[in-house]
Length: 488
Image: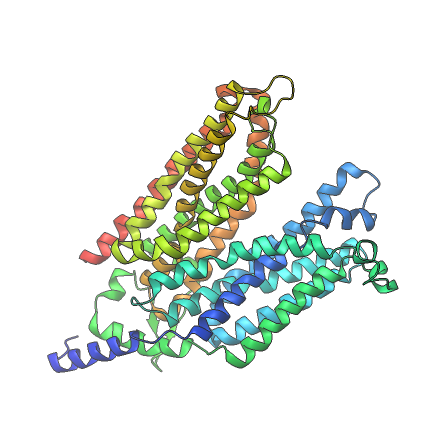
């Protein structure tokens, strides 16, 4: 089909006008607030979950309490995994705002129900319900994609990326500070209710935060999906080869609205498949690093770790968090403006093999400078150890920047704007899938490595480096596919 120059120019102008949109600070603040809720709800149970299971008398064997605690924690992640794509698909059909509201209300209800649970079955059901309603985690980035453009996304996406780790930090603090208040704060909470429901208060605090977010979301969050059909029609008119390049994923209905496709058809698009698989690998590696870093710091020096105390581990994690915030706010916006997003993503992934290779050098250095009497590090070597920890944390946080770039890639290469919610949901499905598996994998691998003593007890390093190298080939595929699309 041919188009006249005048028609094409007018359509191009309309497209430019549609893409250039001022960023609402209120909308950005609401999205960051919403982003905070899921990790807040997910992590607030961690400090008290084992004690909760003991109080519920799920088993008479103390060694089996961890099994039941793991079931409670896993039920949230598994149900979230199952519901991510349906929520994203639904948001493409009925809009982002109602889906976000429904998910947030469900999350609030499930949180308060968990605090009121008095047996294992009800606690399990409440956490599973919370996971089902947390499946809209992919819808929030879709709104972010739709309210930003190239003039502001280099700052907005890194800033938005800060709020998940912030929620993961605040959540355990709430759980630890407010659990069992009748015993810990008898002057304030000397009531029979708090003795009957000792874990209600932390859940109520999270519920209250969620309720405030629901209020602001209901009155101030604007629907962003209405922009999609206009851009779809214009994109088709000005780039008639787009459908061929994307394997015909988008089909137009008679009324001009595009029919969202199922996940298998969406996954068949080469660039989307590459983003999904690479996101899965990045999530596996980064989650494994978070888990193994704490294990590495906690384990005795003779078992391949650093023998740190809990307070020292807290300092190490604080250093890592500070570096992450500085990189996200001050360095990443500049890099996103100057470098190609696909190649920058590939660079972030390539950082990970180096990070894992350097990590065991800390243990080697510690073995050479351990006080044989106490089993702790000599004071003279401590500054070098902490300098290396800061360097490793910096490398890891550069690798973590790939998450924000992943969202940008989804925005740039979604087959159609009307498929943005489904595309985000599909990518988030793969990210959550590996996040559910990697903690168990790396924990078992680390433990087996110290027992078997293969490769000097650093078998876990060899395995993770090989996985990282494989992930580099997946991120390189994204670069290859983006180059094909640019030259097609």
